[in-house]
Length: 448
Ligand SMILES: NC(=O)c1ccc[n+]([C@@H]2O[C@H](COP(=O)([O-])OP(=O)(O)OC[C@H]3O[C@@H](n4cnc5c(N)ncnc54)[C@H](O)[C@@H]3O)[C@@H](O)[C@H]2O)c1
Image 1 (cartoon, rainbow, N blue to C red):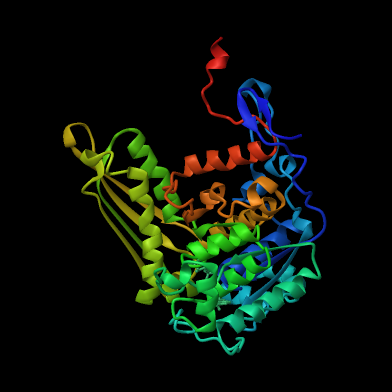
Image 2 (image 1 turned 135 degrees about the horizontal axis):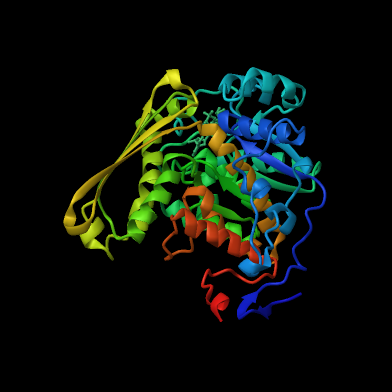
């Protein structure tokens, strides 16, 4: 089936999406709280010990055709996604703990659950990482590659990927490692040539995460970024992603506070309610919290968390409602809470004739429990993108913005942050690549 007309909408054919045959190799950068909860969770689901709650690819359905058709298959039965039983994990870390030891250290999953998964988790041992403490001040690892320059280190990562490729059929890489210091793109990030030269000259603006991304792109492997670092969001990497058909998709898992923000803010805007202030604060006690306690890593996270409201509220279109919005974000490292983050939002809104009101949100969440299903979905959808001819060569997979605090979009195009626009975009992309009619929610046909 090629491009064809269906119900007035152009849809692409399905026949060219390569099937999800064989093993999907998942290489995880950073085997900390999120990564081990993700890996242990996939194994728990495979063993029938728990359900993949929070994962759209495993539990979500997609409506096809008219509301009266009653056709809503599971997404995993509709799109040719890899089966969980076909996933093979490996990864890199700056500590040499195996995944069982790292998961026990992270204290996210209880001992009973981990005990049942121990024999499997112990078999996954990290490869030595590319790391430099200049970029993550609060960590000091021992399981680290040595090289004569950054290009040499990238080549060692390429060799790791090539070796893993020999054991599986396809590979996806996901960054679940620590947040690096804030870096602004420079001339070195402009073209593939300038970036390669920069690696040879050990340019300071090239952080380890960029070397992993470069290695992935060079090998035509999709790369998802769970942290807010500057990693794939610059021209050289976009160019390389397109050139080698290696999908990229923005950064920083949208899990707790920002997920709530991108649900509430669109509601206020839809109802033309003004917002004068939004104060967000968090306490967090895991290693991520410790890393973010460093001002330079916090700055990277802050920038990522701040972006959403400006784009959603469009103050240039609605100056009376949002021009004076004061938006403040704090993250406080508070060890007693571990991975169980608590977030508070105070939102000062105003309504008819400018009368003020307040909303308080208090989210007692579990960071890695929220992030793990996002990591799973990103991996499966990035693999699908790689097998889909109309997606793999476009580089940025904007349809996966749904999962990310900092979505990536084409140059000059503003990103969509509204969770429900993102959800519609994701599902319509699936309908599109599978040759189904898009759903616009117009619905006039029911009244003919
Ligand atoms: N949990 C969430 O809700 C959430 C949401 C958005 C983003 N994130 C981001 O996800 C990332 C992981 O979070 P976490 O809670 O698992 O943190 P963590 O500290 O438990 O794990 C990070 C791991 O990465 C390793 N690491 C650091 N630099 C590395 C490198 N260069 N190469 C290989 N390994 C490296 C560390 O040793 C550690 O094991 C963080 O950047 C965090 O900001 C988490």
